[in-house]
Length: 234
Ligand SMILES: Nc1nc2c(ncn2[C@@H]2O[C@H](COP(=O)(O)OP(=O)(O)OP(=O)(O)O)[C@@H](O)[C@H]2O)c(=O)[nH]1
Image (cartoon, rainbow, N blue to C red; front, side, top):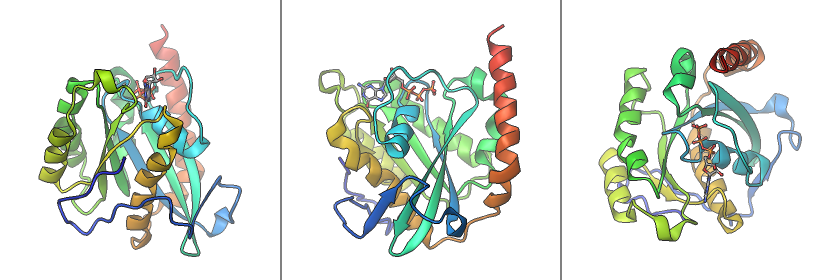
């Protein structure tokens, strides 16, 4: 569900019932014409960052995801009001040992941030201020749009984080709050709405030099990630 943004920062929450919004894989539109925006998804390990990004980019629930090592990249191209926009989504590792050497890359030239916690884990919710602090330490400016997401709402009997507490925290940072489930197919549109809300906000921004990164830098990062995976298995 999308929760009203009481902070009133002019950050409109977008719902997907809007027929003028085109969603598709990056093959559906002329990707060469697309403006590219980098979105990072951060939060504690196991909160569902990979499943949320997979739900948005792949359309299904990823069964048996493995812990992210370093970073995984996913992309989705959107057609918004006649303009093609590519969201390059960086699904980051929650586990400290898998983040170490890549943290600098996560935050470089970032256009938007999604902070994820698990509604069945109070600890993951209490970590959100630390993730916000980490963003600030890496010079992510206050103008960079941010969203807070409580995942795993399908686990109703195990909820530890009340919506009111989450809304209170989100308001204190002037972030929009979403609660959803990457697993529940009925929540698919709300998962889309998280990313669309950011996409609409970013549409009025100028993208930074991300094309260069997507061609060479990402490949380099990917190699680094492979090396880390090898080291961690020892
Ligand atoms: N019930 C339920 N389980 C979920 C949901 N989203 C993710 N999970 C499960 O939560 C576990 C962790 O999911 P991931 O997406 O790998 O979590 P992550 O935050 O990417 O974890 P790291 O890669 O370690 O940072 C997996 O067992 C998923 O199946 C959800 O919406 N509902």
